[in-house]
Every structure is written in structure tokens, then in C-alpha cells.
Image (cartoon, rainbow, N blue to C red; front, side, top):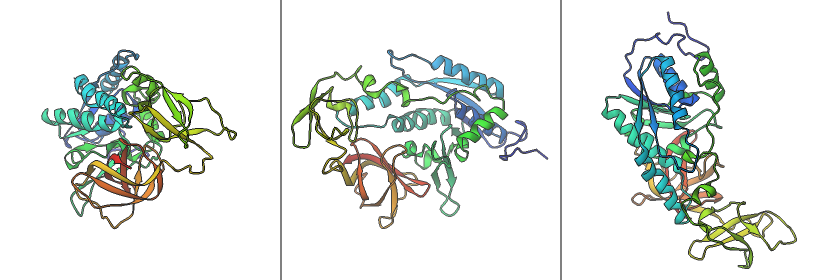
Length: 377
């Protein structure tokens, strides 16, 4: 009888014969994807690792060779093949250019959502299936379960609230979910680290990557300044008086408290935050934390476009759900308005500060129903 460890994982990588099918694992060189590949191998899958080479801006340090070397070390440790697929063009066009154009238009996009949609569960997913994979797998912290009653595949948030990534995966549908595995989603990050050490993986003590998508640790405004020209504009108070300056309205989002200069101080000297912006006039309107109307930029109704529900079934418009309007942000209780094409109306119980272009993701408990892009507030 095969011995199991404290998490129910087979102690031996050869504990099962390879009978569960062929899986292509997106291996970034990090600990999560390393453990993902190991768990699947021990569960009896025929594992092939894939390192994805993506676009990287020339003005930032390029680390993809080092990351691929870590992925190669893990693959050698497991005795699995590692392929390198070049998605540089797709990444530049579908993720980077999209993000830059959205900021130019005064919106606040989420490139990580687009990366998952267009690259990991777009270009990578399609090529893996075409080359004979039965499944694809990533190191995302989320869970996919098949509903025994409906036969549909559902996505749930990870039990580790601090690492859950279901917010970035709302664009997935049945085609993707039915062939996707998220092995680390049922563990806490601390448990994943323990498994990496137990398996003797070369990445066991490697630090998590920081920053946003391909931007890394660089501030978003500094990144965008390479593609969008800075232009000084006026900062206005709630009475439309000029009280400061900024570097370009397109660099800021609602609720932001940094990056602009206040030259005309008020007696309360309280921090200011952006409550409105005018791209054509290049102005920001700000309010202080002790403003007579501190929720001026908040809303109780949100219109979403590009709506996707993971099961393909529209949720009950009479039921109460929760919506996240930013990653790891406060959940807001809401109800859903009538669907019209690919648009959806969300009615919030209490006001929320929401920026155009952000992703709003709807949950029923831990069940991620889907979401959309904020089009109107």
C-alpha cells in the first residue's frame, strides 16, 4: 500500500501509474508552479512543463533566462520534459498595448485579468490542447470542481484568502474549466512551502514574485511614462478652485491619494484623494478625508460590459451576492439587474469607489460566478 504524507500526498513520485492523462503545466520558475507539477506527477498524470517567454519592456531588467533556468532545474529534478513557448507578440499586443491604451483613455485596466484570458488560458491553453494535452495546469490559488447535479464545472476561491486569485480568473468558461487543474488552490501558501521543501524542489525557498504582471516592482506611473507623455494639469478642490498640480490625469484612478502636489493647503491639512478626473481638460478633482461629502466619488450602481459567467448560466437576479471591485478589496453586497446582451447592472447595498475599466467579480460565498469590466458608474 502506498504511504501518504500528512496532506494525503503520495510519498513516492512513482506511487501511481500514469493513467490520468497528459497535462501541460505552465512553469514560471516559482514555487507554486513547481509544486503544481510535482503534485500532478504524484497523482498519476503524464506531466510536461512549459515555460512561457513573454514580452518584457527594454527599460526594465530582463529576468526570463533566470526564471527559465529555475524551471529547468525543477523539471530535471522531476524527470519531466520542459518546453519553451514564445508568446512575446501575443503578450505585447493583447496585454501591454491593451493596458497602455486603457490608461490613455482615462480608464483603470487590470492587465493580470487580460494575461489570464489572452495568454495562459488563451494562447497557451489552445496550443497545449492542440499538441495533445488532456489538461493544462497553473499555480493559481483557486479551485475547480464539477457540480455533480448539473455536470457543470465551477470555480471557487482558494481557502487561503491572502493568496486567492479567483478575482483574476473570472473570464474562464466551461471550455477552459473542464480542462484546467489548480492543484495548489486547496492549500494555504504555508503548506505549499512545506510541500516544496518535502519534495526537495530547487525553488522551495525562492521568494514570491512581486509587482503587477510584467511591470514588476516598478511604479505604474513610471512604467506608463515611457509610453504616455506627461503633461502638467491642475488639481481642483470640490469648489473647482485650483489647489495643486499633477503629471497627467490619465495616470490616476479614483480614490488614489498619491502622485499629485497640493500647493494650496487648507486648515485641516488632511490627506486628499481623487474623486473625479477630466481627461480632455487634464484636471483632477480631489477631496480631503474630512470632506463634507467624503463619498462623492462612490456609487451604488455599476454597469458592466464584457460579462462572463463561468458556468454559462446567468445568476438569479432576486438573490443577494457579493462583488469585488478590486483585488483583495472589500466585498460589497449586491443584487444583479436585468441582463442586456453582454451588459449587467450591479446594485450595491452601500456605495463603493469604482473606476472605469476595473474588473468587478461576483461571488456566491466562495463560488466565483464570473464578472465583467466596469463601463459606467
